[in-house]
Image 1 (cartoon, rainbow, N blue to C red):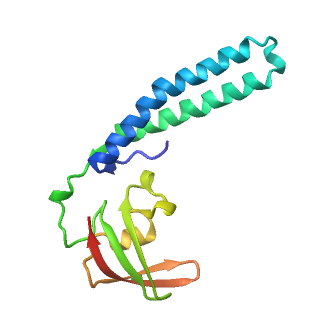
Image 2: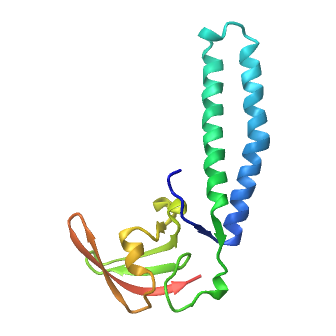
Length: 159
């Protein structure tokens, strides 16, 4: 939870996180409390693996709740309509051509907390994210990587 900057979210993503938090704080907490109560009823807690597992699950849940609350406390909703359509900004969907490896890649630029490579969401503070901010279709950017430099051509910016 060392991140203290703003978290920029679309309105629908903010609603998803709020719903997830509500679910964790109500149904999931209740579910784990029942598991702990059930495990307690089995007697000696010092050698009760079921109790230990339930307490561990509770600990993970409370950590997840705290992280979500921290993220939501820093959330700023982005009105995409107010952003320039011809420039790359946070929450832009971008299609680029990796000139170095001759591949096309499509992704969304997001806050670091939202980054998820498997969902094609890259952070605006990543090397590529930083280079793309403010650029337009047709611009080229170069990104230093471990094995040298990769060049990208911006093909499309879309919602």
